[in-house]
Amino acid sequence: MLFKRKDENLYSIGNIDIDAYVMVPESKLKIVQYIISFFDGEHSIEWIENHVHDVKDIKTNVYRLYDKFSKRGLIVDPKPEVIERGEFRDHTVDLLSIDLKNFYKIFNFSDRKWEVFLGATGGIIIVGLLLLFLNFDIILTPTPYLFYDSYLFGVLLLVPFIVISLLCHELGHAIAASKYGLKPKKFSFGLYFWSGVPYLEIPGIYTLKEKYRINVWLAGIYMNLFIFSVIAFFLFLVDTSTFWNQILWKVAIANLFAVVGNLIPFLPTDGCFLLTMILKTPNIRTNAFKSIRQGTTNFKTRFVFLGFLFFIIMWLMFAAFMITNWIYKIFSEIYILLPFDKSINIFIISLMFILPLAFILLQYWKKYKLLKKKQKWNAT
Image 1 (tube, rainbow, N blue to C red):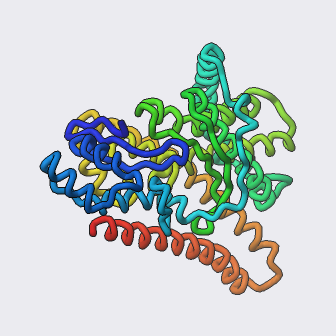
Image 2: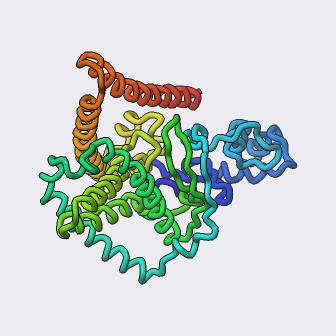
Image 3: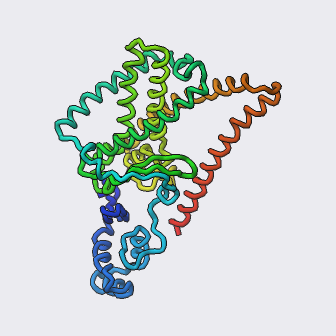
């Protein structure tokens, strides 16, 4: 079962080996299962339609169903010309892939170890976030952003730690998935509309119960919060040198940014999958506002959704404040270093800000047009 809903449950039919599925409402589940039992290469579509009409007294468009299964790669022969792997996979160019078969032992935890791990890390996370709240005034100082008295060097140091934090994020998903009997297949790093994205392939995640799926998708964020909280102990409770303090801050910020970035529900992130689970609505990004309106009809779902939304907004505001402050400091630093007169310096700084922003907006516009095109295609 994909989603248990009051109006009608949704199921997924597919193959766990290739991790491809087709969503089917409960009212059509039995007839769809009956029809696809004849997709064996020995029966024509016309024969299946006539047979279903004679036996079940149901008029069906078997070709449309066959085409849907074929495009998902669920028809072995003949192979389809194009296999739809989902919007994210279809528009991601892989740069690096690592087979994870040799790492299964690392991911596996016994039930006892799992309980101890969750208990210990949960307490550490609570204390770490409390320390951040009690020492929030430090965020307003230059300390978190500097490295060797330079804001620019601070950003350059942050980049490799962000990469490491994202690797740890995916490790969290892998550990949680292994807990529920799944085997992470491959770790990949690719370009999604020119944005670098690491992701983990976990075949069979949609075969898990809803609460287990939520746990797997939360595990990455949980791992980043745990790492941040460990660093917070050293930042706020241990007297360290300026050098190590600046490095630890970059590790902490990298993991906080990993949390915030993965909570944004309008990208193919954990936040999107979690919102899908809360609203029990698939493909929520293709028609977000309609899905949200339809998915929040009862009080419980509306309460959970608003709580989730509030949590995201708080983290986004926190990250936006840090990023804006950092960018301002960097531009001020570069402005002083530029050898030109004041007007040219301002022009160069403006270009440095406007061009990346325009590039980012262009990518989001492309994504928006793509989603609208796909939505129109699905409607027809």
